[in-house]
Length: 125
Image 1 (tube, one colour):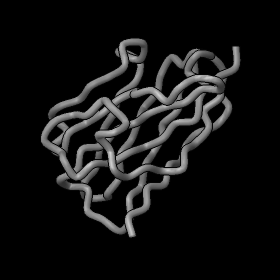
Image 2: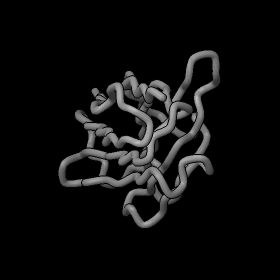
Image 3: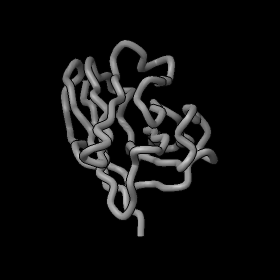
Image 4: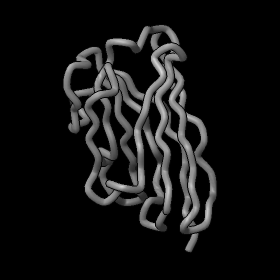
């Protein structure tokens, strides 16, 4: 059974940094595409960042470009999201997701099959 478990979310002040991790068990992610989504209270879940199976292709939500960096370590079956210069509007539950189609980077929720339970990121002003 495939499981994705996020960690690293916490309360941080504006301007601070966090690194989220997504550990995958029950499957080998070396050929997967993976992504991070987030959902703020009262808002729809949105794509934040995605990465293809090699790590050579990445995509980002415009508002996080230059501040967030997605990466992966296939040997550890883990994906990361380094978040710098955090803003209060980054406050949300962050979810990691995976798809068996790893050639390109999907931005739609429907492109992903596997989901984690989420980790809360709160940025105070």
